[in-house]
Image 1 (cartoon, rainbow, N blue to C red):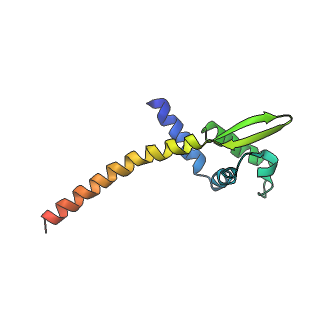
Image 2: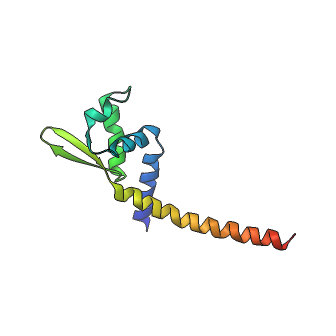
Image 3: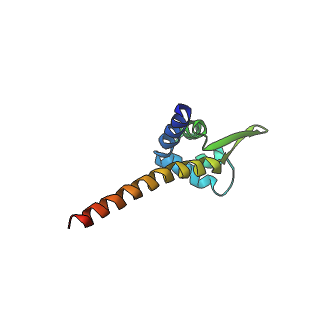
Length: 108
């Protein structure tokens, strides 16, 4: 359970940054090299590479070597996992709000 919690912490930390979210959006269309990803940003190649390290640590992306290039691809299973994690909270809060609504109706 602690390991799962740490993994979700890493995922939410990675997704908290706008640039990293945008990188994930770029990867929705398919895998890209770091150079291709870096072209869009007014930051150094090294800065983009650091963002990718955070995304990789959170298991949101995978890196693989193709010759001298590193190719990055999104990990759709990680996004599915986050969605399932959040769904638990959605269910919990829906139930709580429904209970509150019932109490308020009873007290009218």
